[in-house]
Length: 218
Image 1 (cartoon, rainbow, N blue to C red):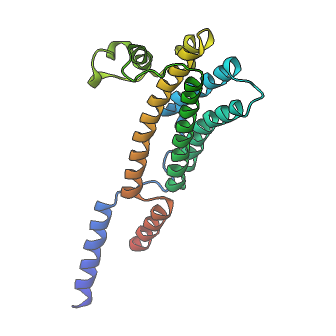
Image 2 (image 1 turned 90 degrees about the horizontal axis):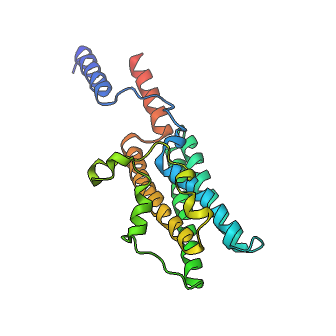
Image 3 (image 1 turned 60 degrees about the vertical axis):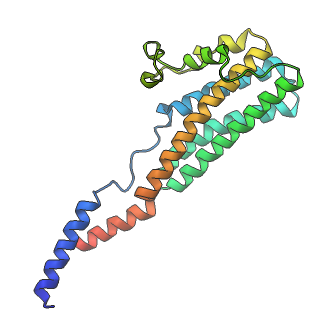
């Protein structure tokens, strides 16, 4: 094969490479955790847990510290993972998974409290659980599962009545219900992060592709 054919094939290959590998930014947009509904739910859970412990758990007990730290861990790890995503998708995956584990730990603490105080754990399809779940959605979308949209103003204010003046049964079950919603969204987020990591790689892969493109264009 002569040099002209080799050059032709090289140019053709380079063109094909550019068509199949769109130019992605080396450092993509990141840090938008405050817009994640998973984060908003976890922030609600954190505030609710602090109030629950102040009202119903001995402040000097290890349980109080563990529950509040678990709630905080869930919130902080989502935030830290989101910020780390710029240069390490692997770190984002790891920290988001830590957040989910912290929430599961916290949910077990609430269930333990109910069981140890001879209080019922509500079934997920209990009308009271459904009512609490519905608060997270826009009012006009509550009629159809397919049309439901999460509220943008998802804050503790929506749920305050379940924690500030009720008894421990309602408060703990409300917390568990919100935790279930948060965990559901974190599961979806983790699945999306895993898919993105497989399809796009992380910072090292993007840097390699950038360098490869730069060399081929010279």
